Length: 171
Image 1 (cartoon, rainbow, N blue to C red):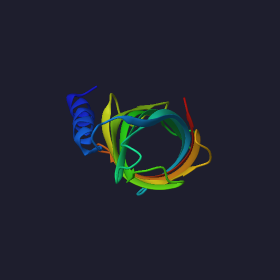
Image 2 (image 1 turned 90 degrees about the vertical axis):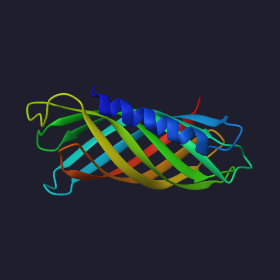
Image 3 (image 1 turned 90 degrees about the horizontal axis):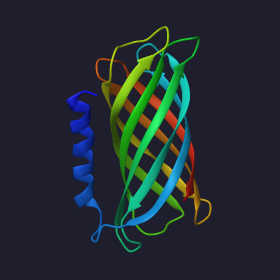
Image 4 (image 1 turned 30 degrees about the horizontal axis):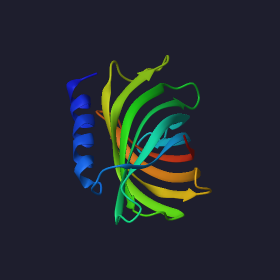
């Protein structure tokens, strides 16, 4: 992994820590299983895939805002036998604090990305950056669903718009 990817992930963690309400403590940790549908903004290539991550939310029940971090691993495959992509990312989201049922959020993601398959688009790891926004709906005290839109790019590649839907369960 290139130094720039490591620096971006480290900076994201360092920036998020002071933003959380004091004292910093995890409100909830959930396993996040999600599906992805991505479209390239120039080529309109379509990719399908999914991933798994761990969402940990920081901030007390009386906090005005909460911060969540979500390290995850994702796999995408282009339609019609195109290239595949594997990503290891860290998302950082800001959402209203408390214990609401519907939680809008906005955030950013940074990660390392690898291309594979017979139509491999690049060699080695490349930095990817995305902005994300969505809604998380609590079904029970331990289960949620979420839907989000993500917009970003991988260094020297086209921009993509990704729709992600997931199911989260506490552990």
